[in-house]
Image (cartoon, rainbow, N blue to C red; front, side, top):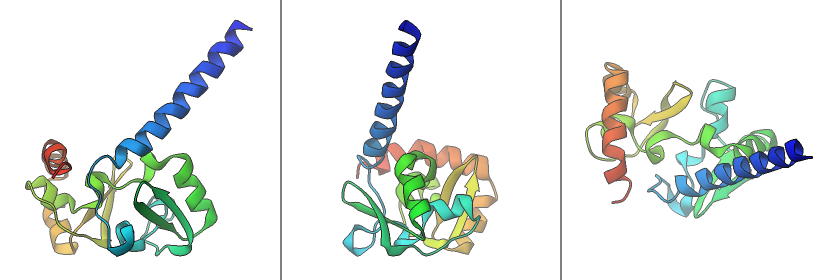
Length: 152
């Protein structure tokens, strides 16, 4: 009985952690288009599962706070709802190169890369090429700048 009780406690803590991550992810600034749509309507799960950018549909959406994420399928929407932290773009969906330089900029959802299991977006393919010249250094710089940028 005691072992089962601890299993339930651990499961409950894990669920609270996931909910907290989803809520905490949007306590920071998020790059959205009009209507609060993130990543210009592209399916953030498709980057990971399909390995390419895929436009989402108004039929399959999930909201976190005021931000709406669109998906190309119900399966992708449900995967996101279950583990949003796994799929949310880094730096609130702002340009990774810009954030590494200490400012925010919009993105082209077709300028992307998964690094260490995390989705990074860039302003365009030119900015992405500059960012990729020093991936680990630019990610570290972005991680250092993002806390201040995310509160502006």
